[in-house]
Length: 112
Length: 115
Image 1 (cartoon, rainbow over the protein chains, first blue to last red):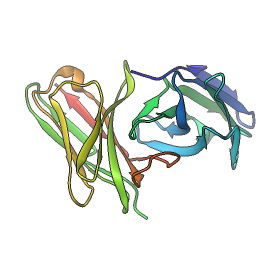
Image 2 (cartoon, one colour):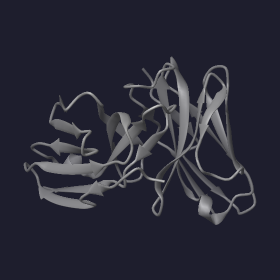
Image 3 (cartoon, one colour):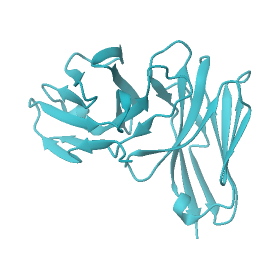
Image 4 (cartoon, rainbow over the protein chains, first blue to last red):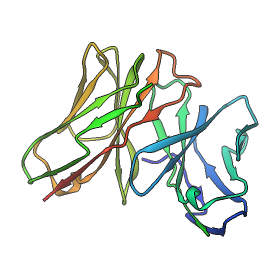
């Protein structure tokens, strides 16, 4: 079963705007990862944030993690049409072997 | 460095048949895990292997099985296929024994259609 929810389920923006996606989860975690998926293809790893980190940057991506609220957000700045994809958060629960639990995903559409 | 390779990319099978999917992890990665993705259930964990041992299994029936070879390559098998097994099957590889804070890299997936 899925760990939690992502919000919004769908987001449509203009090129150049920023896109923010949120993820909530249920259990204590080792880390949280964000992935991108284009049209039912494989998942592309974007960024990993550890449970003891609060914010992380990678290029146009900014991820925050609030373990007290069991939530994370992914910000994509200056979006491009090529950013159009589904975005998923995935968590590694404490004490488990590698078993990622995924959110339901946000479908991002960036209009040219 | 080559990424995670899954074969075949597409499969069409008939109900009742069985199917075997293959995954070659990134060189040096010893953990391989499998996920099923469907529109209704999303991404769900199937099982995880490390050093040829299944360490974790998701909530799937016994028709779903897998194995890992000494070179870390992995296969999953689904017997007595049902229409509901139609899905994108994704394989992920990770480095090392401790999974805390290591990325999981995914292959392109195998799209299985059961008719």
